[in-house]
Image (cartoon, rainbow, N blue to C red; front, side, top):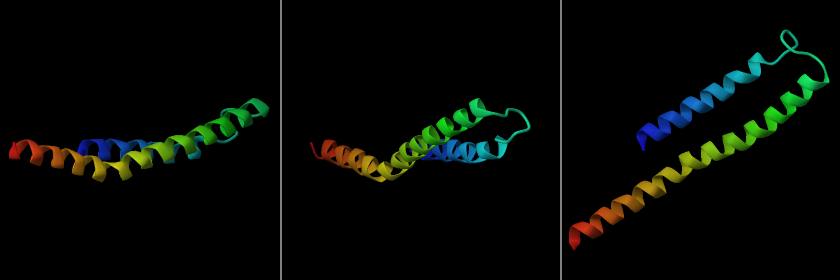
Length: 74
């Protein structure tokens, strides 16, 4: 789970760096604006999913530990 959390944080960091790459130096016009708007919408969804992974981890770890304890008793 530690590796998963580290990977999620790495992706979140990478996503945070992308807006700095937007601008009119490489691509301008309505198509660029449309692409950026689509990206921002998708990015928001992705960030929400990644945060859900992080918030769900404690519950998953507890579930695995409980299963391990139950098997040890049997």
